[in-house]
Image (cartoon, rainbow, N blue to C red; front, side, top):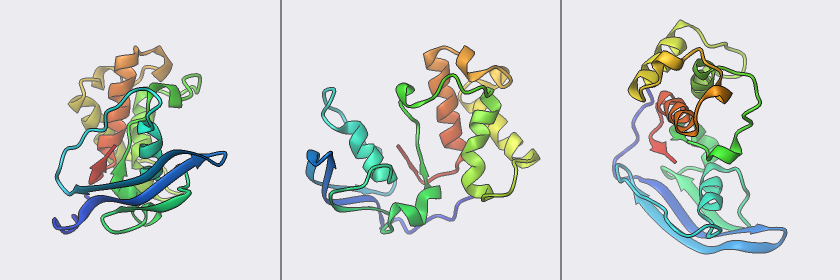
Length: 167
């Protein structure tokens, strides 16, 4: 299990964040503090920058300015502490893999580069699938599921990461 961090630490701290695509700012001067243990939602119209904000928190897009910290650290230092459920369009649905394998991918951060998932990872993945009501579909190809079922599988993948922040 992931070692808990001090409760007084901010789970997410964003200071003066600006993100630009091709030198055109899409987010600017964003300041956000999310204390540990707080449930928060980001809402807004299409194109408002919600996904860009999440990608900046995850370190998937480079800020033009500002900082993003998770429990006081840059994302690269604490990547294992962050679980992520991608949007439907961000996934290659033609990739031939089954539900159980997708969920076990959530354990790769704990395994390192050269260890393969074993019995423990399989047990954890099956338990996460049980939590989201998808265990009976563990051997089904991910592309054969409905959109809602696919999202539940990716939720299970995030849960099996044993993260402290979920996006």
